[in-house]
Image (cartoon, rainbow, N blue to C red; front, side, top):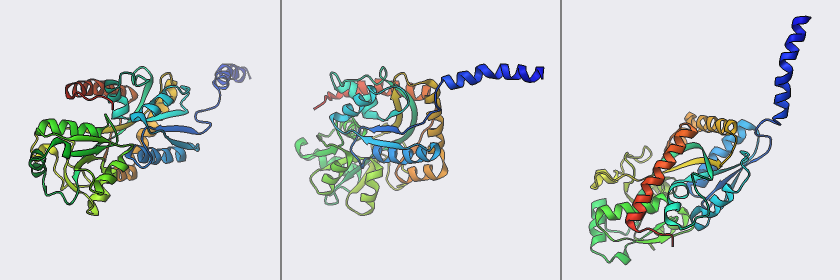
Length: 323
């Protein structure tokens, strides 16, 4: 009896502490803000991951697209939300690493206002042209573009500072050609205008572009990353096709408002890593041109910092400013 009473006394403080901490996370729906229009890579990945997270935890994950101002609208909304783990954001290279360099005041600071949760994927963009373009290779496209006025060489992107925009900025500088940027409110509208023949070229994300390539609506010339895509192994990298050292890779990952509880961040990180490493999910992402990346919140935070430094230098040297 004495042993039983002692055991009950030892358990009592822990039980009281658990009750004081409130209900287990999550006990209500989670909002996942997306900085781009519906239908883009960020939105699609958010819905795929959100659906699996909802299945695992039994709570709805509501994807909330907030396009506009190059992602600043979404970032500000996320940064000003309660840091309780119930508002998350799909962080992109543009929102988390580039906007602070090209906007005088984007309204948020990616390192001060956000907690890194989990880096999910990285992806190359595909250099594509309309089928009517005479270029059948990247080298032929460069020669074709050099023979034209820079204003005629229009290219589309989802907006200033995203990986499609940066892919072309670095490409044009290394190739020595003039290209005229036309920003759109999302990746799909930019690709649609290229399909319609209203643009000379674009670097576009694989998820949207691979079906258009397969249907013959655009012609692929090269991919922007260091390796060929598993989903399209016949397309060479830009480096292979004639510009050694070229490497521009986009990425997506989940972030939370600064101050989110560490145990919640850790639980989210573990769940998200587990989801993207599921064989079915990894295969699906590979078919969409994305490569899974995992790691700790600390590793993701360090990666964001390194990307901020890299793209601050590139945008400064290229004179990129928000339009």
